[in-house]
Every structure is written in C-alpha cells, then in structure tokens.
Image (cartoon, rainbow, N blue to C red; front, top):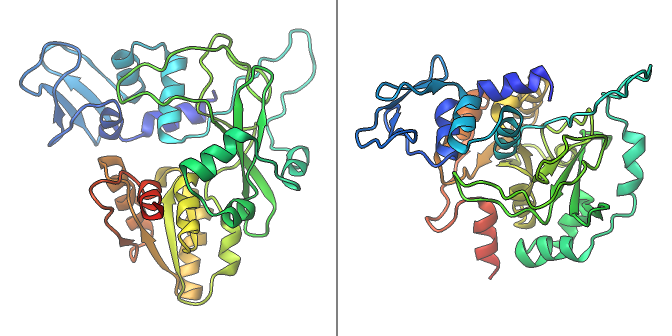
Length: 326
C-alpha cells in the first residue's frame, strides 16, 4: 500500500469512519468503545480529523480508530478502511531480491481488454446479478460484466471501467463469495488467497474488492456521457451496484466511489456537462450518515444536484430497485 493511499485513508472524515464502525455520533460526540462509558466522552474534531476520549485518554486518527476498535494491525486496518469506503488499494508486490526488474505500476489495458470482448458469467455471477439484484440483462451486457474463478476456488465478478471514448482504464474485481460482516464485527479469516494480480500479503483474508496495478476507477460508466441529450437528467450513484440498478430502472447513470477521490478532471467533466448540455444531476443517497455526507460533498461540486429520498425500508437504491421488481 503506497503512501498516497495511506494519506487518503487518514483524510477520510473521522466521524464517518466512526459511524462505519457502529458508533453513533451526535454533535461530534459518541460513547467511547474503549471503556465502560455512559456519558459520551469520545469527542471528534472535524477540523483536525481526530478523536479523543477525555475519560480514558484514547486518541488518534482514522486508522488508529480502526486498529484499536477492531483490534487489527496497521496493514489490516488500512485494508478494512479502504474496503469499507471503496478506496482503491494497489496490492503489495514484493520485488525479488537481486532482481533488476522494475515493478509494473501502470495499468496495461491490452492485458485485460480481451476478457471483455466476449463476457462470460458463471453460476455465481448469474445468481448475484439476476437472482439477487434482478438486473436487466441488457444493462449487464452494456456494462460488459464478466466473471472468473481463481486457483483457490474464489469466484470473482469483473467490472471494467471505460473512459468517455470506450477505452479501458481500470477494472474492479468483486469477491462473490465474500460474507460482509456487520458494523464493528470481525471478518473471519477463512482462506489465505493470493491476489489475482501480482503478489499479496500472505495470511490475509480474501478481500471484498481487488484492482489491477495502476487501475483508474473513479467515475464509472463514462461511455453513457456520449449518449446524453441536451437537458437530459443524469443520476449519480455510490458504487457500481447502485449504478446497475439505476440503469436497469431506465435512467442514465454514473457512479463514483467517493466525492473526496474525484480528480479535478473528473469534476471538470461533470461541470462541463451542466454547462454544455444543461444536464441536470440527481441522486438517491444511501439512508445513512455517510450517504448524506457524500451528497453534501457532491453538492459543493454540482450546486444543482437534486436530492431524492429513499423509502424507509431501503438502505440504498439497489434495495429500492429490487423491491420495485418484486
């Protein structure tokens, strides 16, 4: 994990990290999980992005909070935090001793492009996409989703990221066998798998997501931009799954992993749509504090972004779509 990624993890909003750990933050305070607390003695500084308990003395930043709360070491805490916030982590690839070969850090699109020429979905992928998510088959074909199984028997869904011209710029591999733990729970280490691309840290649990080295996965489904008509609405979703659901509902949509990870070029692209085509932007934020925070962050970039409320029974748009299809 490089220094830039670690810095991104440290810059994640401390209160959002606390909420993802299951702590209830109100007015910058919560009960301290590190002692028998009944008076919300844990405080959060959003300006310094740190936490501190004035009763037991616990303090630190985002990574420290995860390490202490989940009793993980630094690398595992970083991986948990990256996974829970969809931050891309380039896998560790140790350089062989006495070798003059340089590690390949750039994304080699030619190495992966052929995988999406004739997409193939295994039974696990079909079950996930069509039975669980009830997605439109034409949407799955448009997104060119494919699947594969590694040597350890783990099933992966492969999601390509293309730029506006249709050029492959990144890939997301989603673990179809991953059992997501509840907030604050440990993820059981049931298998020691090697990463699909390059080396990895031995003994780690198979993660929920993996990305090839150098993959650029910021705005998802950019080819839809070329199909927008003047003043046509564009929906912004949090992650690929919600984007697939939005497309299946008949709306044009893109997805982002995090507003804080959008590059200046990404922001300029979205703003240009508004200026050039009069595109209106819409969003169904997840029904939680991080979802609302994401909406507010995007609102700073796109002042005309319109908020749509999900029903109380739905935590995200994927839930809403599945309920509407029953």
